[in-house]
Length: 243
Image (cartoon, rainbow, N blue to C red; front, side):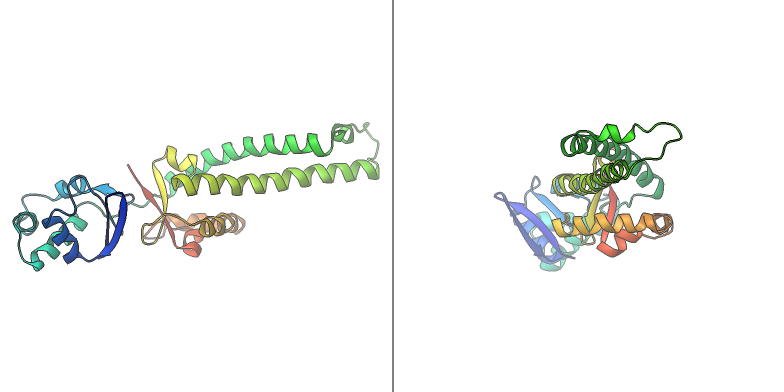
């Protein structure tokens, strides 16, 4: 198992279980050092991870004692594995949690899309309201139809751009959209890392594809062992719970 750790403001690694245990034993990785390995939703202090080892289990208790007293490399490796097993397995977000997060994001995006679209229409087509003033029974003129199509096009395009910018800002900065933050969720890569800009863009359009396929891409979350939707499969992402 590969471990990463932070010392002197620098993130280091990967190191093996054996190297990790040896670094802890020698004090290079202190109790307040941040550590991370695959399966952990976020970086955590060693002191927050190690105490989770159940003391009644001899193998784990021996591993901790050996790491503190300067045991051989085999014990150091055991220590690293023991910490990894101490409650750090990822907790994947289930279907309904993700639905709730998506609903929150949907409302926020709808409001943002309406505001941005309305501003753009007012700036680009100042007399757009006139196109909607059609007498009952009268047929719209060609100019009115062209204006209506332009308005719908602007609103549609602005909604697409707003959704993409929304994902880029929040997923790059917080690894979660506001809806997912509200539900205590984060989006990670398969190895537990944050998403790159390219992966965020790819996932954004993959999410749209999941919805276009009669929602089947979303329903996959309910049946997948790691709670992945179609877009998660495409982009090698996982949605994990942080609380």
